[in-house]
Length: 270
Ligand code: 2AM
Ligand code: CA
Ligand code: CA
Ligand code: CA
Image (tube, rainbow, N blue to C red; front, side, top):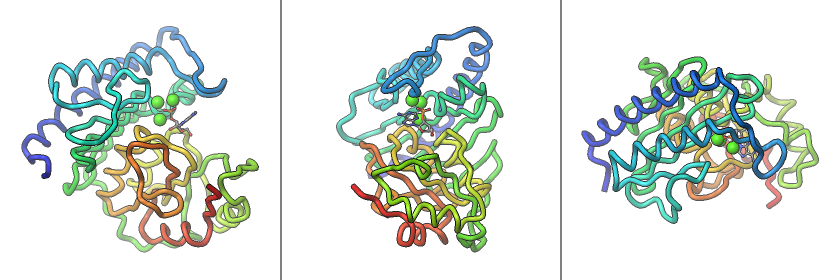
C-alpha cells in the first residue's frame, strides 16, 4: 500500500505551514534568555525551545491527524515500536549546540513515513530562512525551487566531505587508518554541526558526502528523503541499509563516491 497522493500533498502543505510557524516562534523566543540543560553528558545540550518546539508539533499532529504517530528526540511523542501507518519523525532543533553557541546553523527536521517508506522530508534552516523539501518521486526543492539531480560525475579526490571530529579521536568503532587516508584523499572536509543540514547540503550538491558514526532516526529521516530525490545514496557507513528505528552510522553522498568510501576507507569495528 502506498500513501494516497492527494492526502500526501495535503499533509506536506500542512507540515510546511507548521515548520515555518515553529521556526518563527524560535526566532522570536531566542531573543529572550532561555534555559539550557544537559542530557547524556555535559556537551549534550537541550533547551526549553527544543522541548516546546517538539510539543508544538505533537499538539498539532494529535489534533489534526489523531491516527498519525510522532517519533521525536525529546520524547513528547509516541513510544514507537514499528513504522506502521503514518509516522512523523521529528527533530525540533537539530544542531542544538549551534543554536546555543552560535544562534544559527540549526534546523527543524521532519520526515514523514508511511509503512516505513519515507514520503515527505522537510529541513528548515531557521535563521537562514531556507526550507529544503521533498516528496518521494517528485524531486527535491530549496525554497520552492527544484534542486538539480546529482548527475555530474563526481570523483573522490575532487569531493568535499562533511565529517565530524571522531576521526581525530582514538575512536574504537572505526579504523583510524582508513579515515586518515580518506581525509587525505578528498579535496576538503567540513563539519557543520547539524546532521539535517549536512544532508540538505549533500542534496544541494554543495558538499559531496557526509560520514558520521552515530545518528538517531530524527537526525536523518527528512534528509534521506531529500537526498534520495536528487539521486544521492544513504546507507550505514558499512553500506548496509539504514534502520529507521535505531541508531545508525551514516554515509550519505553522491552516487559516484559512495561505494568507494564504503569499500576502501571505512572499517567499522563493531
Ligand atoms: P542534535 O543537535 O539534535 O542533538 C552534531 O554533530 C549532530 O549530531 C547534530 O545533528 C546533533 O543533533 C547530532 N547528535 C546526535 N546525538 C548527539 C549527542 N549525543 N550529542 C550531541 N549531538 C548529537
Ligand atoms: Ca539533542
Ligand atoms: Ca539531531
Ligand atoms: Ca535535536
